[in-house]
Length: 185
Image (cartoon, rainbow, N blue to C red):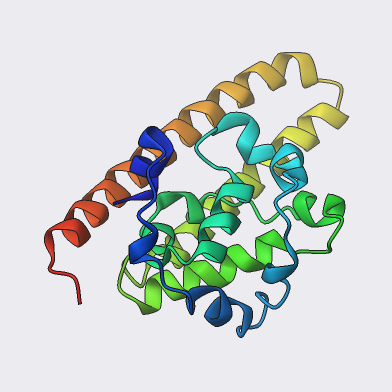
Protein backbone atom coordinates (compact mmCIF):
# COMPACT_ATOMS: atom_id res chain seq x y z
CA UNK A 1 0.00 0.00 0.00
CA UNK A 2 1.37 3.39 -0.95
CA UNK A 3 0.63 6.82 0.47
CA UNK A 4 -1.21 7.63 -2.77
CA UNK A 5 -3.53 4.66 -2.12
CA UNK A 6 -4.07 5.81 1.45
CA UNK A 7 -5.00 9.27 0.19
CA UNK A 8 -7.42 7.92 -2.43
CA UNK A 9 -8.96 5.07 -0.47
CA UNK A 10 -8.42 6.15 3.14
CA UNK A 11 -7.32 2.63 4.06
CA UNK A 12 -4.79 1.91 6.80
CA UNK A 13 -3.87 -1.63 7.78
CA UNK A 14 -2.67 -1.08 11.35
CA UNK A 15 -1.52 -4.69 11.47
CA UNK A 16 1.39 -3.67 9.24
CA UNK A 17 2.39 -0.68 11.37
CA UNK A 18 5.93 -0.51 12.73
CA UNK A 19 5.76 0.85 16.27
CA UNK A 20 9.51 1.59 16.26
CA UNK A 21 9.38 3.95 13.27
CA UNK A 22 8.55 7.12 15.22
CA UNK A 23 11.31 6.39 17.72
CA UNK A 24 13.83 5.88 14.93
CA UNK A 25 12.82 9.22 13.36
CA UNK A 26 12.95 10.93 16.79
CA UNK A 27 16.43 9.53 17.47
CA UNK A 28 17.94 11.27 14.45
CA UNK A 29 19.14 14.88 14.34
CA UNK A 30 16.18 16.97 13.17
CA UNK A 31 13.54 14.45 14.16
CA UNK A 32 13.67 14.93 17.92
CA UNK A 33 10.38 16.84 18.25
CA UNK A 34 8.16 14.67 16.05
CA UNK A 35 6.34 13.11 19.00
CA UNK A 36 5.28 16.59 20.19
CA UNK A 37 2.98 16.97 17.16
CA UNK A 38 -0.71 16.82 18.09
CA UNK A 39 -1.97 17.10 14.49
CA UNK A 40 -3.48 20.57 14.68
CA UNK A 41 -2.83 21.15 10.96
CA UNK A 42 -1.15 24.54 11.36
CA UNK A 43 1.85 23.25 9.39
CA UNK A 44 -0.34 22.32 6.45
CA UNK A 45 -2.21 25.62 6.42
CA UNK A 46 1.11 27.55 6.49
CA UNK A 47 2.74 25.44 3.78
CA UNK A 48 3.22 27.09 0.36
CA UNK A 49 3.72 23.70 -1.31
CA UNK A 50 0.29 22.52 -0.09
CA UNK A 51 -1.27 25.52 -1.84
CA UNK A 52 -0.14 24.18 -5.23
CA UNK A 53 0.17 20.44 -4.55
CA UNK A 54 -2.69 19.16 -2.39
CA UNK A 55 -1.19 15.67 -2.20
CA UNK A 56 1.48 17.23 0.01
CA UNK A 57 0.03 17.35 3.49
CA UNK A 58 2.55 17.76 6.34
CA UNK A 59 0.01 16.80 9.01
CA UNK A 60 -0.82 13.54 7.20
CA UNK A 61 2.86 12.66 6.79
CA UNK A 62 3.60 13.19 10.48
CA UNK A 63 0.49 11.19 11.43
CA UNK A 64 1.63 8.27 9.29
CA UNK A 65 5.09 8.39 10.88
CA UNK A 66 3.59 8.44 14.38
CA UNK A 67 1.29 5.53 13.49
CA UNK A 68 4.26 3.51 12.18
CA UNK A 69 3.66 3.37 8.43
CA UNK A 70 7.34 3.21 7.49
CA UNK A 71 7.04 1.80 3.96
CA UNK A 72 4.16 4.08 3.00
CA UNK A 73 6.05 7.18 4.15
CA UNK A 74 9.53 6.33 2.89
CA UNK A 75 8.30 5.20 -0.53
CA UNK A 76 6.10 8.26 -0.97
CA UNK A 77 6.96 11.00 -3.43
CA UNK A 78 5.48 13.55 -1.04
CA UNK A 79 8.45 13.50 1.35
CA UNK A 80 10.50 15.04 -1.47
CA UNK A 81 8.18 18.00 -2.07
CA UNK A 82 9.11 20.06 1.02
CA UNK A 83 10.48 23.47 0.03
CA UNK A 84 12.37 23.77 3.33
CA UNK A 85 11.05 27.30 3.78
CA UNK A 86 10.28 26.65 7.48
CA UNK A 87 6.86 28.36 7.34
CA UNK A 88 5.52 25.29 9.15
CA UNK A 89 8.01 25.72 11.99
CA UNK A 90 7.27 29.43 12.34
CA UNK A 91 3.60 28.69 13.06
CA UNK A 92 3.77 25.33 14.88
CA UNK A 93 2.51 25.77 18.47
CA UNK A 94 4.66 22.80 19.54
CA UNK A 95 7.87 23.99 17.87
CA UNK A 96 8.03 20.98 15.56
CA UNK A 97 10.37 21.60 12.64
CA UNK A 98 8.60 19.74 9.87
CA UNK A 99 11.26 20.67 7.29
CA UNK A 100 13.93 19.02 9.44
CA UNK A 101 11.74 15.93 9.83
CA UNK A 102 11.40 15.79 6.03
CA UNK A 103 15.19 15.80 5.76
CA UNK A 104 15.33 12.87 8.21
CA UNK A 105 12.70 10.97 6.21
CA UNK A 106 14.49 11.69 2.94
CA UNK A 107 17.76 10.33 4.34
CA UNK A 108 15.97 7.25 5.64
CA UNK A 109 14.36 6.70 2.22
CA UNK A 110 17.79 6.78 0.56
CA UNK A 111 19.35 4.52 3.22
CA UNK A 112 16.49 2.03 2.90
CA UNK A 113 16.74 1.92 -0.90
CA UNK A 114 13.34 3.43 -1.68
CA UNK A 115 14.96 6.00 -3.99
CA UNK A 116 18.27 6.28 -5.80
CA UNK A 117 21.13 7.76 -3.81
CA UNK A 118 21.48 10.65 -6.27
CA UNK A 119 17.91 11.96 -5.82
CA UNK A 120 18.85 14.47 -3.07
CA UNK A 121 21.56 15.91 -5.33
CA UNK A 122 19.10 16.19 -8.24
CA UNK A 123 16.61 17.97 -6.00
CA UNK A 124 19.32 20.36 -4.82
CA UNK A 125 20.04 21.14 -8.49
CA UNK A 126 16.37 21.95 -8.98
CA UNK A 127 16.35 24.13 -5.86
CA UNK A 128 19.37 26.04 -7.16
CA UNK A 129 17.62 26.57 -10.51
CA UNK A 130 14.53 27.83 -8.67
CA UNK A 131 16.75 30.21 -6.72
CA UNK A 132 18.17 31.55 -9.97
CA UNK A 133 14.65 32.11 -11.33
CA UNK A 134 13.74 33.89 -8.11
CA UNK A 135 16.80 36.16 -8.34
CA UNK A 136 15.98 36.93 -11.98
CA UNK A 137 12.41 37.82 -11.04
CA UNK A 138 13.47 40.04 -8.13
CA UNK A 139 16.01 41.81 -10.32
CA UNK A 140 13.35 42.59 -12.94
CA UNK A 141 10.69 43.44 -10.36
CA UNK A 142 12.92 45.95 -8.59
CA UNK A 143 13.81 47.52 -11.94
CA UNK A 144 10.14 48.36 -12.51
CA UNK A 145 9.48 45.59 -15.05
CA UNK A 146 7.46 43.32 -12.77
CA UNK A 147 4.22 43.52 -14.75
CA UNK A 148 5.84 42.59 -18.04
CA UNK A 149 8.39 40.15 -16.68
CA UNK A 150 6.21 38.67 -13.93
CA UNK A 151 3.77 36.88 -16.22
CA UNK A 152 6.61 35.47 -18.31
CA UNK A 153 8.58 34.15 -15.35
CA UNK A 154 5.46 32.65 -13.78
CA UNK A 155 4.75 30.74 -16.99
CA UNK A 156 8.33 29.44 -17.02
CA UNK A 157 8.07 28.50 -13.37
CA UNK A 158 4.73 26.76 -13.83
CA UNK A 159 6.07 24.74 -16.77
CA UNK A 160 9.19 23.76 -14.82
CA UNK A 161 7.23 22.74 -11.72
CA UNK A 162 4.81 20.66 -13.80
CA UNK A 163 7.77 18.94 -15.45
CA UNK A 164 9.47 18.30 -12.10
CA UNK A 165 6.35 17.07 -10.29
CA UNK A 166 5.47 14.88 -13.27
CA UNK A 167 8.87 13.20 -13.12
CA UNK A 168 8.60 12.75 -9.34
CA UNK A 169 5.19 11.11 -9.75
CA UNK A 170 6.56 8.74 -12.42
CA UNK A 171 9.62 7.85 -10.33
CA UNK A 172 7.67 7.27 -7.15
CA UNK A 173 5.01 5.23 -8.96
CA UNK A 174 7.76 3.00 -10.35
CA UNK A 175 9.38 2.67 -6.90
CA UNK A 176 6.02 1.92 -5.26
CA UNK A 177 5.18 -0.71 -7.89
CA UNK A 178 8.61 -2.31 -7.39
CA UNK A 179 8.16 -2.34 -3.61
CA UNK A 180 4.64 -3.77 -3.84
CA UNK A 181 5.90 -6.65 -6.02
CA UNK A 182 8.73 -7.65 -3.69
CA UNK A 183 7.91 -10.11 -0.91
CA UNK A 184 7.50 -8.62 2.56
CA UNK A 185 10.37 -9.30 4.98
